[in-house]
Amino acid sequence: MLIEILLFLLLGILAGTFTGLMPGIHINLIGALLVSASVSFLFFMPGLYFVVFITSMAITHTFVDFIPSVFLGCPDTDTELSVLPGHELLKEGKGHAAVMLTAYGGLAAIILTMILAFPLIVLVKKIYPMAQAFIPWILIFVSLIMVFLEKKKFYSLLAYSLAGILGLIVLNLENLNQPLLPLLTGLFGASSLIFSIKTKTQIPEQTLEQEKTSFRKPILGALIASPLCGFLPGLGSGQAAILGNTISKTDRKGFLVLLGATNTLVMAFSFLSLYAILKTRTGAAAAIKELIGIPSEKILILILIVALISGIISFFLTKKLSAFFSKKMNRINYTKLSISTLIVLIAVVFLISGFLGLLAFAISAFTGIYCISLGVRRTQMMGCLLLPTIVLYLV
Image 1 (spheres, rainbow, N blue to C red):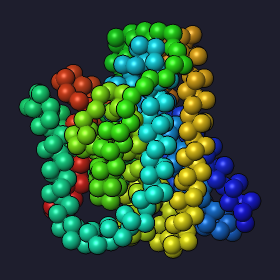
Image 2 (cartoon, rainbow, N blue to C red):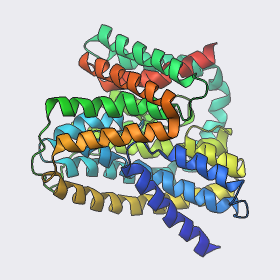
Image 3 (tube, one colour):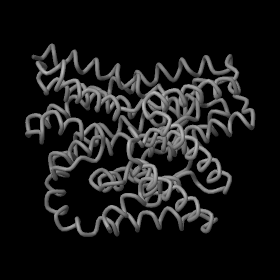
């Protein structure tokens, strides 16, 4: 059994590397396909092996997916905040440093998860039943923080509202497969790529030098905010980063560390959430629940061990891949690369979500472009997830 577990762990790392590097391909999609396969042609495989695969894939994805965010400006829902500070460093020839700051945050997050897992489970089991009635109000409070921390408060509210209304429409469309794909890929990926194409961004020669920054503030902010977002619906690593940065203010380099930490912490805490309160907060946790139900304490310990091993391997894997991308960037026409990436996104959306998905993708992209043009933070576009969740709880 040990050999099989190690094999599925390594296969999960490979899958997480693929999903992390490929724009538009998310672990939720792979998890859904795996659940379908487990009840059809892979029915003879023990569910435990799939759990190991999904865990290692999910953790690896949280490390690797910052590479396309920084180098291509093409994020998913967990890395959209890295585009601006990551691109700033990329244009200074420090793209590798930007990725490594997120990787160090992710590595710290894995270690913290191992230390805090069981104390957090005990705490959440006691607090969550009392907090359930306040979930929509907590989400409203987070939304207000996002809006009113901006200098341009009216435009901030406008961007949040537009994205929120778009989210309500797209997420409630019938016959639209994987609605999050066209919604988030359009809002955050396509809009950034179109801006890069329009401005003809020039990328200078990249160095492999790493940036020094204080880890204390960003890790503290991630540690305070991530448990809240890991156990509440509609709140992901983006919102955890906003809250964490509000609690423990840091500079752009520290913010990348904070993003890397919250991205991994929220994913790890979603597994704890499944065990502690029987709720799924990520697609990976939902897939595990579909495969084996609520994990036992022994299975949870296995999940944590797999997460630790995957996190350590993923750190070094991210370092190698980022260095490779850095060496190749100055030889590539960035405008052509952006156009090629945009074409890939369109093809992926069409193959997975069809013509209706393409329509949602196009509208999301134009909404994203307009929101960016308002001169507010792209975090406001996370209203596309927050507002539908608030409405769901209040209606």
